[in-house]
Image 1 (cartoon, helix red, strand yellow):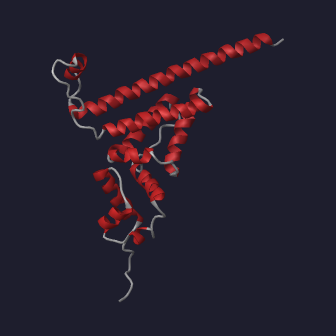
Image 2: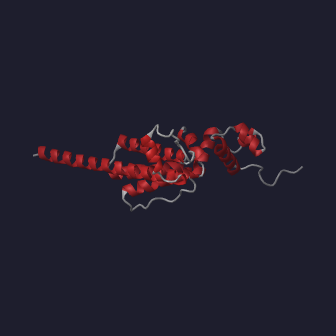
Image 3: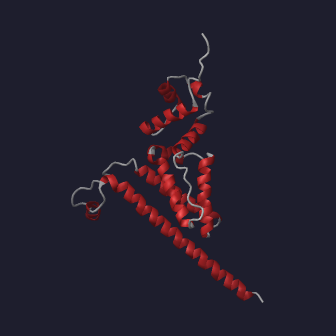
Length: 219
């Protein structure tokens, strides 16, 4: 019997099957992956070196659609806003992938490029060193939380009537269930950006005060 003209398995098929498992179960394993593909585990290892590499391939696949970059001429806060929107959009089709990616180190060059853009925007705003890392952590927490919210039930809270009056009143005036996650994301995004802009202004003002003080002490 001659050898097949084309490989029976490809990296793209492995990634697609792993994404299907994550969408269904929140994670994947190589035995389940092999079963879903109808191949042996050893066949999968011809295409990926192990779990770590496959997770990074899933990360790249999730964000493949978010290739649009913010305008380089936009203000830093607009660049950051656009980057966060792209970040969340990457999870939109696979929200159950968020916990898996959050627990692993980012090595994918495309995703590192996205973080580079976020770091550059924060540096442009006047943030430095540890504050940039802290701000990136804040962006991460918000974007991943917003992604998880995409898979939350339509009614995330159901208080007993009369037991939680403030919550009941708020829920009575909330957006329809289908719009709740989007409304929460937009509210949180604008709150986060406003907070970072206010902090950037404080940094700028502190810098001016320091410069004036140093100028006053110089002959």
